[in-house]
Image (cartoon, rainbow, N blue to C red):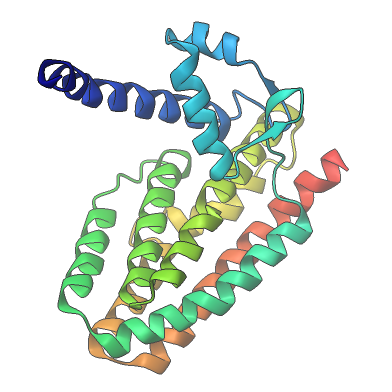
Length: 257
């Protein structure tokens, strides 16, 4: 019995690594539009392509369903979810506009030193992102954005708020929108500067990108205990992001509608 348990425990970490790696690989295929929105996904084909068994593929697809990136269709298997519609986009940002400014205000009121240190460490990490081009910088800034907003939600002290924010997976959905606009620009000539104009100012500049500047201002307000300022700055930051994405979402929906 002991020998059998030890054997199973020794296999556990390897199995976890395999499952996580399969999840990361399929998620990347979806985010990069190698698997297109709405495309059906064959478990058997994915297993062959990734050189794994069907079990980690099934586990990965279940996790991706929870992320909102795939949908399980009765008797048909899985397919990648569609991009956000204009209405879904508005709903997402209305939700963010309610909970995230509140979270910033509460984080400021609590002033937890560990979480403030985490915010400042994340800002320093973001300053190290190479900005040779917007296309290269944006994916890393998306990851920074996710971490920064998650820390603020956690710093509010309300676990339900943090969980609710995490479950929106908003940054993964916005990344898919960004990658789709690049594809349109490249393949269909949707305005030579369309994507560049949308994202370059926010994520790529010779000095500090606007996105990082806004994060620095929010973190400073939280650190100094300026609760009302933190709330207002977060609301303005979210509205700025919404305005930046509106043309992309509308263009994508007009193309597919």
